Length: 99
Image (cartoon, rainbow, N blue to C red; front, side, top):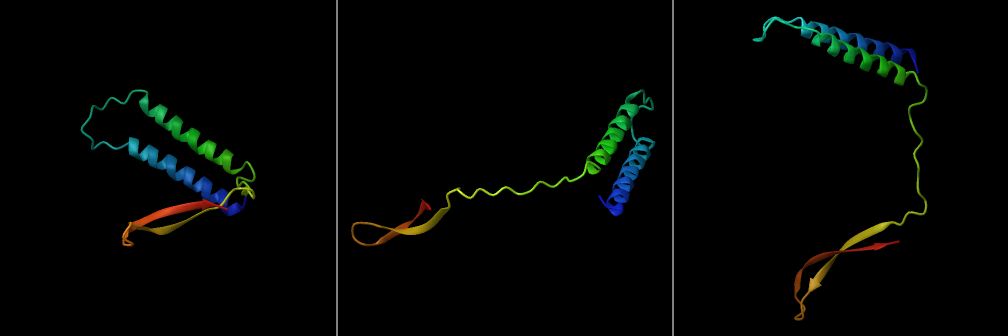
């Protein structure tokens, strides 16, 4: 993990926490002023998400190698004309086959 990625992760966590604190301090809402213990739960959740993000980002390689199946069949489809008994084209239909 590069220094840039670490600093961007820390900046994002700080902005998230700052936004959560500022959003809970607003007083222009039409609701009772009693806040109770509920704002602490929200702050705990935001903090846990920030710490979890930092731990996940510092865990090393987070990219998995692609897995290719070589024996998987290939499906190819094409449109075939539908012809009635008089030789007129009535429509098309899709015919698929596996290779």
